[in-house]
Length: 173
Image 1: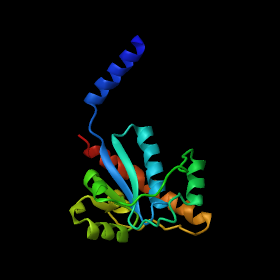
Image 2: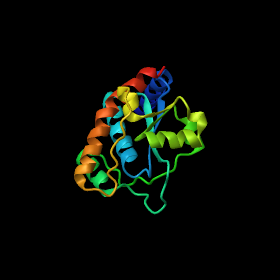
Image 3: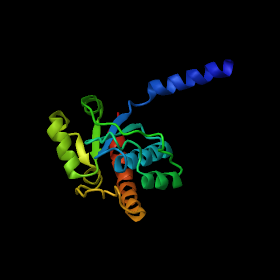
Image 4: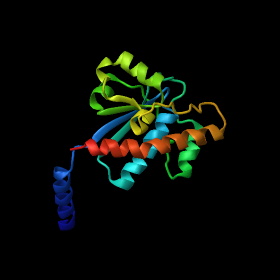
């Protein structure tokens, strides 16, 4: 019991001193592929680097008939030790927008859709590539395509995320 109380005191002290984490939303069309991959890989990087960041993923056009992760995306992530089989797609809400510090989209059209629906998001919505490199390039949409497209999509996402997360972490106070 003494050890449990000591551990609790340590965690409480550490959390009181820790920075408030940045909150990021990754958004794509249906929240079954690119945004799911982004969230999973981001969480892996966040854990490895101990970054003060929380992430979610959402859809700009949720299809209620497709709410589970795309099989090829789930298989690729599982090969990296990331199990997304319990994920269920969710639509981006006004609450998500107001609570997120940054919103990263897979494409320019996702960004435009968010800004049209949520103009208050101006200044915190970027494509992943735009935020990582300064140049906006759409992340490939592999939906319904063979595995090699998913591999390219995941490579693209994995290439952008370290820079995205490092830049976001640098803004945390």
